[in-house]
Structure formats: structure tokens, C-alpha cells
Length: 252
Image (cartoon, rainbow, N blue to C red):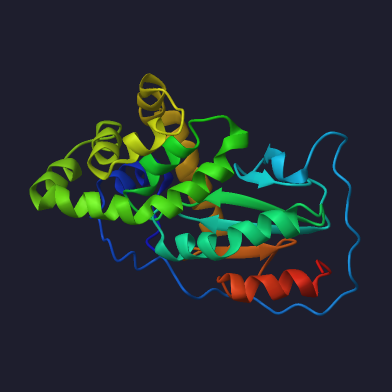
């Protein structure tokens, strides 16, 4: 993954070539294995609520689903354009949400990571709704992702080159339209005017760029999805690899 100075990162992401293979969307990650611990007891949610309905915006800019004080904290650095992130979401979402997060023992935090030109408008739109909607919208976006790539293929090289010549936020708007992201988000309750305002939010785009740079520097994130459990970057980024590590830490 190329490192960019912050003042250029948002622009570079906006005009970078659209490599649909997404080389930085990685099947591998660095980290260590966990020792097997004692089972952790379930944690009751607040009266009248379920942990799967609780979403908290974190200081790092992430969206935490579940018990904010859960003893087992799973963090995903994920890119909305990443096909392996989409695969993880497809394989994990129901069980991670309904078994692990619902128990109060595990929280799941999504920290959006900007891999390429597609991720900035995608993140601006998915976070355009209320914070509590973001994890669900991200899950839906990953399920819809193949349609995005089909739309971009249909747009053709000439249109993509014209978009790459634009400056943000115009390039964000054009990418959202060419890929169908704008229609995706308005079909899920975000008003057209609100979506347009979010795509023009250069302050938010700079914050997303800063979060990506911070993660790259602090945690050495070089591909997505990458996971941390209780602050430690872990090996593996498929559900078949992550689930046992949650269980080893007591989520069983």
C-alpha cells in the first residue's frame, strides 16, 4: 500500500486508477496466536435493549456494534471496495452478530480504511446516515459490491478517465454516480440532497484520510481486512480463522 502525505491523500485516493483487482485487498495479515482462556460469561444488555441494537462511535472514528465494555473486542480495518472484506462479511455477519455480539461478550468495531478511489465516496455515503445505521449499511454495501463493479465496467474507459481528471469533491460525485453508489444509498432511506451534501463534505473526507494514515502508521495496516482482538493484530482474516480466536479468548 502506498503511503501518502495527509494533505495529498484525499486527492490521491480520488484520482488514483481504478484497479478492480484491488491488490491491497489481502488474504493475509500479520499477528500472533492466542492462548486458550476460560469461558467468559454472557453480559446482560440494558433493560429493553439488545446488544445488537447498540452502536457507539469510537474516538478512532470506528463504529462499534455491541457492548462497549465487552471483555473481547474485535476490530476490523475494512474497505468497502475490498472483495475479501465482502467475503468476510458474507461468511461472518449473522453468526458474529447473533451469537457473539448478542452475548455481550464480544464487540465488533468497523474502522473504514481507504484503499483506493472507490472507498472515499463509498465511506462518505455509508456514514451519511445516523451512526447506528453504519454497520448494517456496510454489510449491505459489501453484499451489493459485485453490482458496483459491474456498473463500473459498463461505464467504460473513457468515462473513468474523465472522472480521474476531476478534482474532489466533483470526482466523488462522479464516481458515486458511475458506480451506482448514489442509488444504493438513496434506496436505503438517505435523501438525495443529503447524499449530495455528504459527498461534498471535504472535512469528513480529510478525517477519513487521516484515519487511514493513522492506522497505516500506528498498526502497520497494509491490506484489508485486517483484525485486532483486544488491541493485538491477529493472524488470519477469514471468518474460519477469526472465529476460533474469539472462542480461544473465552467467547464460547
